[in-house]
Length: 157
Image (cartoon, rainbow, N blue to C red; front, side, top):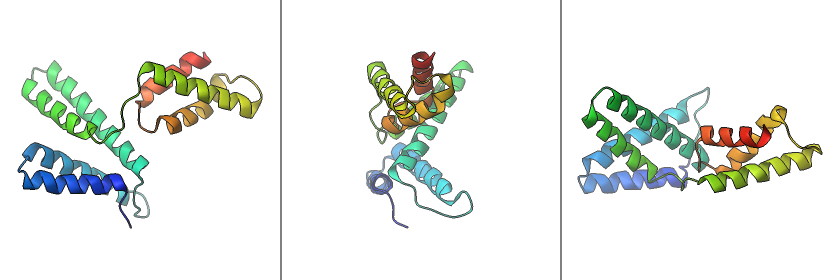
């Protein structure tokens, strides 16, 4: 099994952070590499993850950090919230640049047009799955699924 370029970069950066004695980055990268390893051995057969799948793991881990930070803030645990935000910032270094609203709207319009060309009619909410699949592929980790879903619903509704 060969590692994806992104996974190799994570490993290289882990080694560099260990040599630099950057404990926060080292701990976060170890956790991310562990999550990727768990994903690789899940299911019935072990497999190497592609860059897109690694980005999916990174997005999921980043989302966990954001949710944890908000919960800690609500419960008056600012020091723990700051730690979660620090980890999220380290993870976000490896994520693609996030799309702005105009970029998402463009992707959604292109996907709606593509589905309309395939089906021969303007898509409705019944074709939301088809449109979402095209938008998610085009976004390639550049936007949260909830933001994409909201934009697709607005375009179809």
